[in-house]
Amino acid sequence: ELSIINNKTYKCEIEFTKFDIEKHQIIESFKLIFNIINKYQNIVKIVNKNFNKKFKSLYYPINKPINFKKHHIRLLKDYVYFDKIDGIRYFLIQSDIGTYLINTNHYIQIDEKNNPFSIIDVELYNDKIYAFDILFNKNINIINLDFIKRYEQIPNLNFDNFTYNILEYKNDFQNIQINDNCDGIIFTPINQIYNNKFTYKYKPFELLTIDFLYKNKSLY
Image (cartoon, rainbow, N blue to C red; front, side):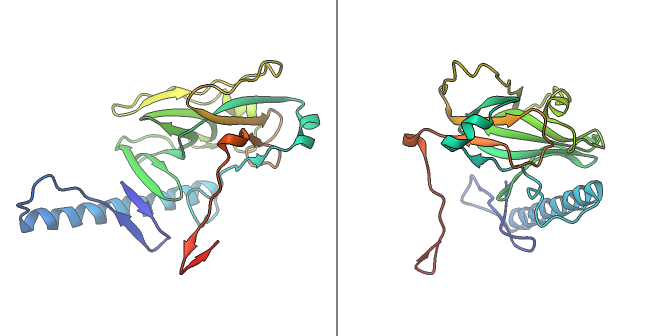
């Protein structure tokens, strides 16, 4: 597992199961680290090439939902909704150098198979991948299609070390419930492109969280 601090700084954790580590094992570990970083940088190049744009991060094109407020209720026309799984959001990127889960902090290699370039928006929860949107499908950019046309192109995938599921959307707004293992609801417009300002997230008051940064005795 690789953590990305920024474009030039990475953090990689290697766990040794024995105390009597030999010098060649440490050297091989460093070789592994450099190989992982090199693969990550290659993925960055592949993504930038396919988008024809240089992103600050592989996670940059992510569609971030807006916090749902009372006045948004009247806007919920031509919408579906998803359970907001209490997991970790990733891009699942397939390429000719393998399949990877990537977000702003982590990089996980799933396999080394040669695949057409695809980017799938997923949530990882208990070693299960839940897919709910897609940006690229087999070398074709579909980011500007409306949601339903994108959703219908989410592929059924098989991985040895992860269970893969396509998260089902719902349209029954009369019986909305927050299910177990979920911490809210995502309201998705069916007639919008991937990046839009009309995707909302709702979390009950008791499940609200605050993100903050503590640095040099200051709170941000």
